[in-house]
Image (cartoon, rainbow, N blue to C red; front, side):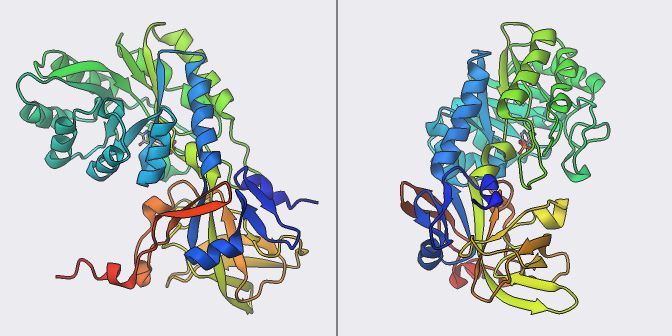
Length: 419
Ligand SMILES: *Cc1c(COP(=O)(O)O)cnc(C)c1O
């Protein structure tokens, strides 16, 4: 019988007769030999399929609509390029993501820029690149843009509002509630909208809201539509991102179809029929297309059985920061029977460096490969050098071929900024 964890891996995952996990025709032991571990492995076909699924779900039902990928979930140029090739725009938060979006070849008109603390430098890059939409979060954004936009040029903007809807997700990734640092409440938004409408260099295109992240129930996301509509009639409504991804056997996020259906039902009820709609999926776009491959470095059978791997909170902060639960498997021994309860821990000097707890595994041995599925979102982007850790590569696999789209950091890279 196929290992149940295959459901959590990308569609291209399978198991060879000897019990080795394969992805898009590549064996994980070959990937480990060629690229080392840890490595973030992306099934490119699955990533492309998800992008098309989103695009088709939205535009077949609301043709005047577009999907922009929230780059921050996986801001690798190669990932952004896949989104561009599949016809999506890119949502960026800050100058770095904007510059990599341009490197990925996106039409600048399809870039949407966010941020609650954009600097003058970042806004200058945005204006000079002629990006499609700057999402204004506060009055200071408008002050800066009015200084930066040259005569004869008009910058299109959206205004971010606080929709004042609560969501059942981790407090650190709720953004639409009263008291959020993002956006403006309705009264303040109305004042700023009037100011922008009077500006000679800004074009008031519409309004934006984002409720939060890892939200399983699309009704919570659709609840932002009515507060957007209450701000007035505009050409554009940007409904944000936030759909949850599946990490564990128990997770049951809405499908893309159910999510888009819920948003469009609310849009039909509240928004003008000729409005342009934008959605900004991040996590749910990329999470399921990737997994992280580690090597077991130590197995300590003491008060508990600690299976320690060669990565951890240096390549995945989701568990430590948001209590994200994962599953994992011994990727070279997929046919072996589970034998013990373990806790999978990382290599970093902190007790919070736990990847999976608890977990049933076959009796782990030093040198085993351990694969954690559903690690496409917010892992690479938050990777860090804690304990002198060299950030892992991002490896794309497709049709039996593998290539590093981002190489592993070297020891020299660690000192590249020393003066
Ligand atoms: C983070 C973010 C997104 C994407 O959220 P996900 O939960 O990853 O889908 C979209 N829009 C804005 C403004 C964001 O800040």
